[in-house]
Structure formats: C-alpha cells, structure tokens
Image 1 (spheres, helix red, strand yellow):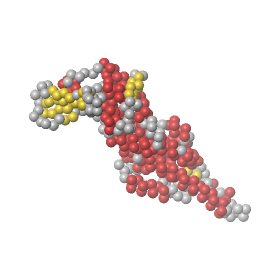
Image 2 (spheres, helix red, strand yellow; image 1 turned 90 degrees about the vertical axis):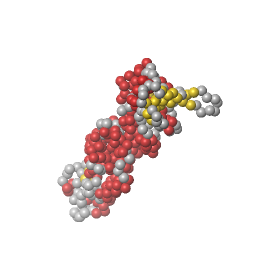
Image 3 (cartoon, helix red, strand yellow; image 1 turned 30 degrees about the horizontal axis):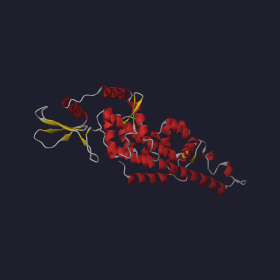
Image 4 (cartoon, helix red, strand yellow; image 1 turned 60 degrees about the vertical axis):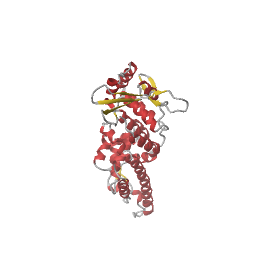
Length: 352
C-alpha cells in the first residue's frame, strides 16, 4: 500500500509542474499558437506588443488550468484510496488492465487517476464527459501524464476534456467510489459458492447488524427474491436452538459423535462443525469442504432438494446474480465517506 506521505509528495510535484506555459495547441506554427506574442491580435498599430492584452489572456488561461489541475488532483486522490482494495479484483481480470499497468510502474497518482476512470462504465462516462469518446480512456491517462510536463501544450479536445472533468469531478469521485464498492462485492462473491455467500452474509450481519440487514437484503435466484435470512434458514446456517424461558438466551443444539472413527471426535454446534484429536481438550472449528464432509458423513445431514435446486440455479446465473447483489448492497452508499467505510468493513471481514 502506498503511503499518504509519498502520495502527497507526488501530488505536490505534479502541482509544481503545471505552470505558466500550459496552453492550448492546435498543431499550428509557433507564431500562430494561442497566447504567443507574435499572434496578430497582440500587435498594436505600430507593430509593438500589446502587453496588457497578452498578459490578461495568459492569466485567464493560467487560472483556468490551475482550476482544472485541482479537479484532476481530487479525482486521482480518491482513486488512489481504492488501489489496495481492488488490487485483488484486478488479478481476477475484471477489465482494469490499464490501471494495473500504472500500479506496476509504482506511480500511485497515475494509478489512482486511471483507476477512477476505469471503474466507471463507458456509457455513463461519455454522457458526462463527451470528450472521452474522442480521447478514449488511454487518452485521458495520457492527458494527466502530459499535465505533469512543464510547458505542456493541450489540444482543443484535451482542454474540453479538462473542462468537463472539472465540471463533473463530484460525480466522478462518487461514481468511482461506488463502482469500487460494487467491484469489491463481485470479486468476493466470484470465488464463493451459494452456501458460502449466505454463511458469510449471516456472520457479517452478526458482526455489523446496523449495516447489513438480513431481512432486507438478499439474492434473486430463479426469478424469486430470497432474503439472506430466508436463505440462512434454508441452508441450515441460522442456528437451530433449544427452547428457552422468556428472557433467557437461546442456546444452539450441540451434538457430539465419538464413535465415527478411532482418531477423531466431532461436534455440531448449530451450523458450526468441530473436530478434535481423541485425548485432546481443544475443539477446532472446521470450514469449507471439511465442514461439509463432516456435516454429511458424520452427522448424516444431506442437502435437501430445495438446497440442490437453489445452488444449481445460482451457479447457472452466478455473474448476473452477483452483479445484482452488489448493486443492492451498495445502494445506500450516497457519498465517498460511506463507500470508504463500507469497503473497510467488507475488506476486514473474511468470507469462507
């Protein structure tokens, strides 16, 4: 992860390089380049330079570029926050190759900028920043790279892009933040089975009950919406409990098997399955395929027809279901801070 100090140093370097000489270029002869003293509009009747008009025009353009520069810095800064978060997603090949190239060059500023733009769907980007259609995503990345060069000159299209980016920087930052949150969910779900997702969401809600409401969040499988709470019941993830008296805390049903083999003892506690060496006092929580094997072989709990059907339908439409789930889980993230908080909570939790 890139340190904030290093990132700030690079931003400061970029700021110093964006100086007086950054002007609009149409690939014309030097004497016809915008703001050049030799241009006819800067000549007085006696042929001398109209310094007042020339200085005013240059100052206006310099102020405009200064304003645009800070728009780029804001976007690059927010994008840089996602580098450690979506890094794993890049390794899964989720169409962020351009950004990963900048990461490998150890340029977090360029990485953050290109990542922010790479995260936003093309159609949405073009609607807000039409110049993207002319420049392309690579052209936008080159635009920032050019902005880091002293005395760089911009084409008309590049200046239009700078203006459009600055005008829409709030939208760009929020949209990039939200897309990063969605991508984080999709990259997590991509490697999980349906029972693993349901178990993870159930445990996540126990840890953060105000952020993840199992009754209001869920998946659309086979055209039917199932809340995570309902799925937890279907897959036996929501612990079965013993009856209690009013006000008494419910207890999970616990069952121990000691005669399945000669080396191990096994324990079922709700939806959790444990094993320990005979003679040992320490129970070890099992996970994944080992847990599933103990569940079916030792305790004889086989999958129900409903579970088999749901898993089959989910597997057949996994990408679209995961995408819809990501949209729902991030639907209430209405600002950058909420997205960053969500990404931290999600990133700190381990789905198994």
